[in-house]
Amino acid sequence: MALIELKNVCKSYYSGSLETKAVCSANLKIKSGEFIAIMGPSGSGKSTLMNIMGFLDVPTRGRYYFENKKVTSFDEDSLAEIRNKKVGFVFQFFYLLPRMTALDNVKIPMIYADVKDKEQDKRARKALKQVGLGHRMKNRPNELSGGEQQRVAIARALTNNPKIIFADEPTGNLDSVSAKEIMKIFEKLNKEGKTIILVTHDSKTASYAKRKIRLKDGLIQ
Amino acid sequence: MIKQISKMSMNALKENPVRSILTTLGIIIGTAIVIIVLSVGAGIKTLILDQITSLTPELLYVEIRVPSSGTRFEKESHTAQSLGAGVQITTMKIKDVEDVLKLQNIESGYGMAIGQSKFTHGSNEETAMIFAVGSEYKDVEGLKFSNGGFFTDREDKALEQVIVIGSTVKERLFGQNSNPIGQKVKVNKQSFEVIGVVEEMGTRYFLNMDEIVYIPIQTAQKKVLGINYIQAMALKMKDKNYMEVTVEQIEKLLRKNHNIKDPEKDDFVVRTLDDSMEIIDTVTNGISILLFLLAAISLVVGGVGIMNVMYVSVTERTHEIGLKKAVGAAPAAIKFQFIFEAVLISLLGGILGVLLGAGISWLVSFIANLVNFEWPFVISSFMIIFALSISVILGITFGYAPAQKAASLNPIDALKSA
Ligand SMILES: Nc1ncnc2c1ncn2[C@@H]1O[C@H](COP(=O)(O)OP(=O)(O)OP(=O)(O)O)[C@@H](O)[C@H]1O
Ligand SMILES: [Mg+2]
Image 1: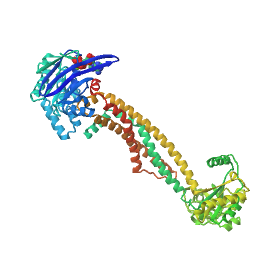
Image 2: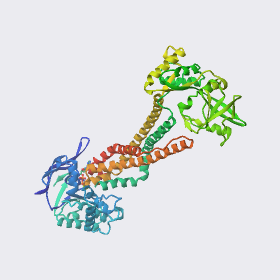
Image 3: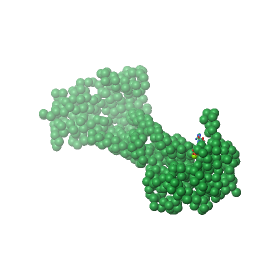
Image 4: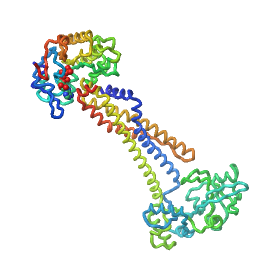
């Protein structure tokens, strides 16, 4: 049974009458527990495809089934719930809130899942330890290195125990040593059963994945 | 969840304390005016009631008036203008009082003229207001005396040269611990015997009653004021339930005495307590409405200010909103965060406004009390709750649109806006 199934998914942007097809006729099946790298040159539609699969964006055409349910007909509240409970995101630029400590940043998804305060604290600490940041919980993002910030972001993605982790160029802003550490974490998470979907144009990063999807001009090759 | 989201709203305010305070200015002023209107209004009411306590519903007042046409209020302002311009109505006489007193429902009454003169005793001088009144004044107005008593109707008719003085007049002419009864006071080169001193009264009808000298009306007309008319009469009814009939009878009688055929040409007006209350209400309500209008304007200005700042806040935090939506914040959760922020701002303004308004109201009553008015400082929990509710409602109303905008942002676009 497929966890994710895309049928003829397209995403177009229009400026006036000019149509840009960011993603075109995407057909894709992803099973639970896979580790996938989406690859392709800049502008080929990798992020667009990932955002659609991660419920951050909606396709202009085609159908998206998640756990055999048709996502394309979900309303805003249901989408929010799925983003909150089923998936975790890791972005190239970390996107931590600057005025909060690492611990508080990790708690954000749990606030919207209405997790009790004590439980939030317990889970956030556990997640930070899991990514090797047990000693930096009270630091703010500007007191952390890029690699550390990305690990906080991963911890944040983990706290609601999602099925899938989406990562858009998670190592794009990191040096090779930090990048390797981050990829080791993803590898471990995948071994523990999480589905990982990774966007990268770096073949070294992609080598951690078990399956590669190549995009060119919005088309899956 | 609500607790933590509320904390986010609070933190947002702390990040921009100066901006938050400045935004609240309109709300502060508006709420302060609301409190002042309510508090000072209540104070004024107490003050006025205190000033007219002696106005019992049985009393009717007949005053002279310059005949003219137009509505009632136009007539009154016209009267004031004419009197100011020196037009004198001299048609009301003691005889009118005597005739009115014969009406069935009239128990007692007195005629009155007001003047001013210099009084001397030895080397002491005092210029005082003269109440030239009939002997019934004492009972109708409920005068009390610290020495002696009031003149009688017989003394009035006999043109006896007797006076009753207020406590301040007594102090100025005779000194503090003296008994002036039987002593002579000179006015208009004539000698008057003091037969009574009125107990200290403070202000009534917004006049300082302790600085008044009472002279029998007929004595005063001939020997002090040099007039043969009166300016007003006060009448006490036996039964106030027949007020309307009684007023009609008085009007008819005076028209006959004054030879008036057309009621439009009346040179007098009969006032009841209801009329006085009506005038007071009209004035105070007018002022209140004006002030509330002012309050409403500043509150709306304040509300628009909040809306403006909330839009800025949403724009500044588009990125944060995008991130929150990406990790699963429902639109309602985002909306709540921003509406709560707006409510916090306006509530802060409301609280400061209540404090400011209460402070100003207290100051007003403090100053009024300094100049001897019984003006209490009134503030009730109702006023505070009312004012704060207004600010909360404003916060929700004007915070709604920006919050709605935040809630409907697309997560990806919002995230990219970094
Ligand atoms: N909001 C948008 N409005 C218009 N065009 C867009 C928008 N977002 C993306 N595009 C266009 O869609 C195409 C695919 O963009 P996308 O971000 O998916 O590429 P990508 O493969 O992730 O590239 P990169 O490796 O540079 O991140 C590009 O041509 C881009 O210009
Ligand atoms: Mg991209």
